[in-house]
Length: 198
Length: 359
Image 1 (cartoon, one colour):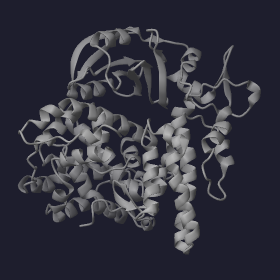
Image 2 (tube, rainbow over the protein chains, first blue to last red; image 1 turned 135 degrees about the horizontal axis):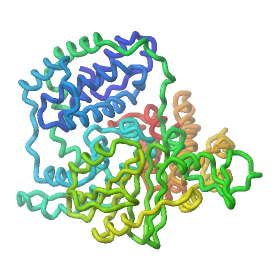
Image 3 (cartoon, one colour; image 1 turned 45 degrees about the vertical axis):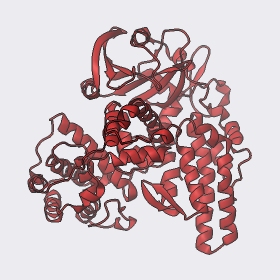
Image 4 (spheres, rainbow over the protein chains, first blue to last red; image 1 turned 90 degrees about the vertical axis):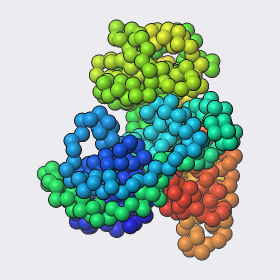
């Protein structure tokens, strides 16, 4: 299993489309799956997200950037696929039936959230969708601001500026919730003091 | 510190990368891959020019349209260069007029509010910040589905009674959370407009509703004239670049003239990223080459030059508005240390500097 962040090399320029797609799929399948699993209530639905995201990639292979931008590009597609799934306008992707079944039978362990995690999730829930998405692309998917720009379709400078504003909003929400969070289980201390400055 | 915040977020993820990697799905994934390749593709493959993104692209793609449009260009027609639109008193950059003629041109009708930020500014999508004292609001325009935006906001906010804005009914929402954080959505022609309280939220609901109701449509001249003074005029680019470079050590062969020839109009943040980035790119490139060639003196010179970036005035100025300076300083620090930078996952300076700094 290749590392999920392994970048596509430059040497694949002359490979056939099928071969190039195969490399793309193998390098990034788990990144797309992780993105979906972290955002969906039912792990099985992540199978459709993966299938539909890579179906878009296959059909628009010429548009998929080579090199390190492929992953954020795919996550940007996955983001739109998920939005469609939430709006229930997606079609069911029959191709993903076996993956769907496997995801249903393999237990995808969801960690019990700590008191701090719950506070962070509440603060995230209070943000706008735009703010939340850039924060999670950075925090959960590990994307750099330039990569977030690729995923959400803005320049790197703009993404950096949005991320900066979103972080300020999140800090404000966390500050407001911190006293409550710190006493949720009587022991947890939400260490946000260091987060006040940039 | 950003690191602390990112760590909190990482810890709050319901599923980790490690857990995802551990799933035994190789066989069904291989099956899916084969099934996808067997799917029909639309027509013969079209070979379009490969898109390339970088920070510099931020200045030539969306950003260029954005910033160019903020060209509050008050230059004489004899100035030459970019084609200009004219009005009886003023001449505007053509690119600014293109946006101004296409999008809803709104200003706040209440006294004392001025536009302080307009760095995302294009025909399809744009946003600007209005500020009065410590209070601020953001106005967005987006060519897109009104219904989708309403549904999106409805997920994370509670709907309040609507407000009439220029003959349209604006749907008002209060974001869930401890703050008076409001947003409103309405249609204006083919655009979905949004008006959101800025950070930190300082407006009561009554004040917010009053501001929303005060929005007025303006003419092209008035609208462009209201743009912030931080916008750099094309006629001033050379002088501004020169001022930004003052006191900064330049790498050998640095092409200052190319920066000055840049005809696009940018706000100071975007131009600062381009100028500081060009210097840093030059030094890092030299450092990479010197290390390859075993030229320790040249490598040391580049490291030393990059260490001065902590004092570059333009970066200190930009620090309040975004993270470009922090990213650049990461590279400076990495050059001095183990030559690795945190870019999503830790990577080497050599691999990461071009996309990260827009080289």
